[in-house]
Length: 544
Image 1: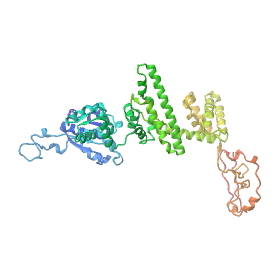
Image 2 (image 1 turned 120 degrees about the vertical axis):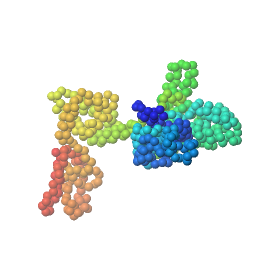
Image 3 (image 1 turned 120 degrees about the horizontal axis):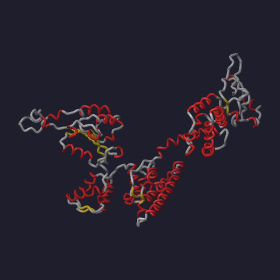
Image 4 (image 1 turned 90 degrees about the horizontal axis):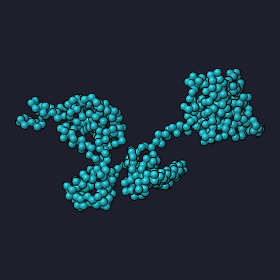
């Protein structure tokens, strides 16, 4: 109210004009917003997921509401002067004004049909004169988090007080069990306690477990929640082996990656229990041993994952579950010094795919000169080629032209293109990165090399049947047909006695099959066709 009366003084605009409430479903966010508005004397206007909240709708509905007052503010419903209710009060209009507050519920669900609504809402918040309360469920997408998932310590005192008022006694650990089984839904816990009170006055831990299972909340656990359950000390030890196995199947693609990303950040509870005398060195050694066991298990899980996806052995998913999730969590479950991090593997996936593609293209071009596969090219050839293709560029200015020719000659011998040159440098690692190899090479030298390379001719790899320098088609492959004769005209080809051609076929000496059938230099000359009657089309494309 103070900020509103001062027309929202300059500063952090979002902290004055709007507030964001976040937390899991059933926590009481919407109820809290309504109660606060009522206590402060505001009239509430609520928009939730049942309303259309697209960009156009938000602009039309909220655009006029955020500018100032609404008509209902000028109606005095509590007048005692005997006049009919609902009429304008001229004498007490100032005292009867009731300001308005807007509640935007479930804003994290403004997508699909509500396209553009979030962007428009942000624009309106920056200039609104009416307070706006935004509510969402996803705490990871919020900047201000006023509601968090309650722990047993946070909720036990309040829930015990409520239960006592209702004549119900709660034994130790009952509240924690109810929070776990309901997913932190306070509303559901209150409903369970209210129902249980009708038949009994005392609830112990076993009864809470049975009640929680019978009323188990049907919710989809998020990826972070699944990871916290496996890596957290209390949650991991309170679950049975079967319950731990079930978590894997809720997201068997991403959960192993999350465990792999965060296991090393945990402080293992087993290490603290084994080393109880406070010996820091022994504690660190035990921690390293536990992390080593977890890493070995994750490695075994990766092998099983390759068998599942590569050989379609989906029956091994339980084995993969144990190796990649349950067993590593057993070794490292404990305290988390910070927030869980998302898997960084996916962030590098596109880069890995690109590098594989570049390596494959280089190996295809080089295989006319070498017999190595992609692995051998990556490990044996590229490190040496990277040096040989960059070191000549660092020579003296008077030798730079000869350096260009030396590099081009080396590239031609391996049938490498200008794009392959950049790819080889891009695939460098450690001290062989592009920045390290090209350090000291000026932009003028680089552009000079590019111009020289583009101005010269280079051998080009082909994979189709091509013409030789004699103007005849070479025999390619094992078809059993001699392509050594001149190429006939298409009309004459229809009159060829195929059987006779095959009877007169002579074996072609293996020596006549050479690499030239697959490689041509420069641009092949266009095939000329004689316009005179009865002429044959002959291949004229000789290599330069």
